[in-house]
Amino acid sequence: VSALVSDGHAAATPLGLSVGIARVLYGGETLEDILARADHALYEAKKSGRGQWRLARDRANDSAPENHVTRSSQSSGDVA
Image (cartoon, one colour):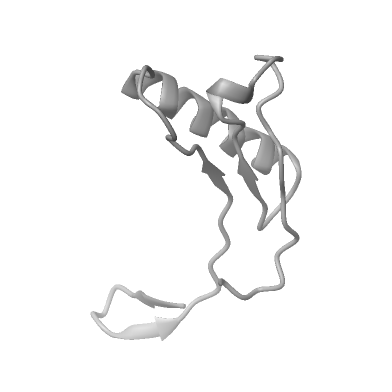
């Protein structure tokens, strides 16, 4: 990953990230609902450590509102 540094040149800079993902498969959810699910998944990813991601459950299949996280991945340093 390259980042622009203060002198205006690109330099290789280590970059880590955590990601929360919410899919939208049907209508009926507000933007706020979707963002809340993605936000919850993001914080679950952050609690699990560096370089994690979480996929929020689809609202239609969510029988336990407090448990939105369904998958994760260990980071190998590569982004697919």
